[in-house]
Length: 218
Ligand code: PCA
Image 1: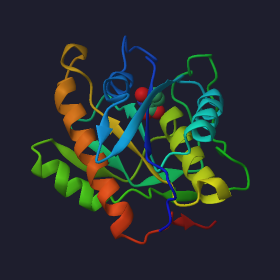
Image 2: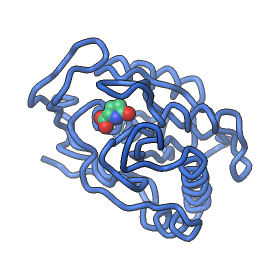
Image 3: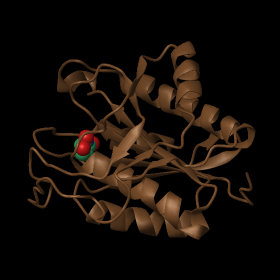
Image 4: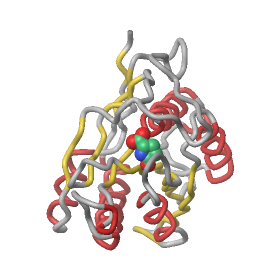
């Protein structure tokens, strides 16, 4: 795979939403900002938990940084482990309003786009390396129908259809709560360690594997 001179990893998190006073995904993105992983520089950014607006912010970041790898992060309050999301669905159905009060019901993220995209991260290799690093991690087949899935689907659609992003891999990882947010939870340092390990693995695999973003046609 040709990646040109790309040497940036974009890590996004979301701001607090719903009943959560904080969002660990923004803290992980902030902690990794400007760090080096396997010779690549990380750009960490916080996105608004708002349908539409988060994808506008993502577009600016993609145009500005032309990243080699994009890892979206978000909070999934019920999970006890890092969740490597396999599938982004072209469907949104919000149980709660977003941070600007929108609550879309049963509509596509992008009308006319495929029904779903598979993550183009090397999920099984990441699962093994993150697990070997001592971090609780699991795969997940469903990123929900709220703003995280909206971002994940919008990201994968851009990676599949924008020529300037050819060769960029991307995917999404859900995080548990932090210890002072309730149970289940995970310490911030362990989340950061897990995400760093996963990114290192994905960067190594990006030169070793020939794997294109898969899509499932309707
Ligand atoms: N989690 C929500 C949106 C923002 C976040 O961090 C979700 O899972 O959709």
